[in-house]
Image (tube, rainbow, N blue to C red; front, top):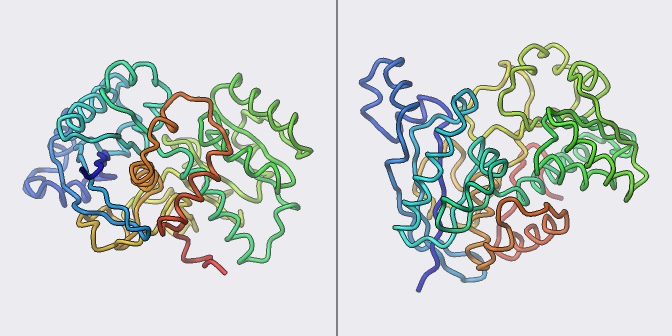
Length: 339
């Protein structure tokens, strides 16, 4: 029997939503937004016979939720969680062995992992390991392409108080001069700082003030889905050599400011572009790292190893990276090609 996964897609904006629901094109914009904010996942697209370079074969079900990804952080958390529970029930009916989440839904599921375990009837991943690896590889390749030596640079992670923030901190601590952590939960940030100081000689500190943190940065990774603070700092961001906004999920998503040089850092090229018969707002054959990890875990039947809420281990970043190479997946950073 072919293994099957399910993956939840939240359109980034109304333009993307119209691609999934043509009826949106005939609705006034305000009415379409009201519908998206009050609806649960209600469309499924079947991805048949996905085959890796190893010859392994799986199938997938993309569950489309009308809830817009850029609107979700402003909604009641319980409502967003209910859309995840609903998607989980759909995935179970489709006989999927694993449910994948991305974007704000993935972040919220990690934050509320005990509720997810109780109410979603199958394993769930938010793709944190491959996402963190893709961010690391994209920035490393970008620095190399631009002739920048990472051991002389300062990295600022905005929204570092999440699992991907922890993983990125640990991975970069072996090659960066200084790391500055910014986020809303000082206890989590302090634990990350203590872990880095215990294992490495890298300078690391917590800076709650985003303005002070950014002024010192050479590289910025944004993991904050609200982006409220960043919108006020465009002029400062324009001066930075590398700004990686890991919350971007599609080419149609608006950057914080038009013309601001932003890299996503969480995109992956798959070896079977013809099998992805769905417009995800990305170049053909390119998907986000969360979806890629969901596929890879299904190929390897390792979903239980990457369940939400577990203590994030940086070794699993390398494990999922190795699995990706074996199956022909590669981090997509066309501005910094692999050499």
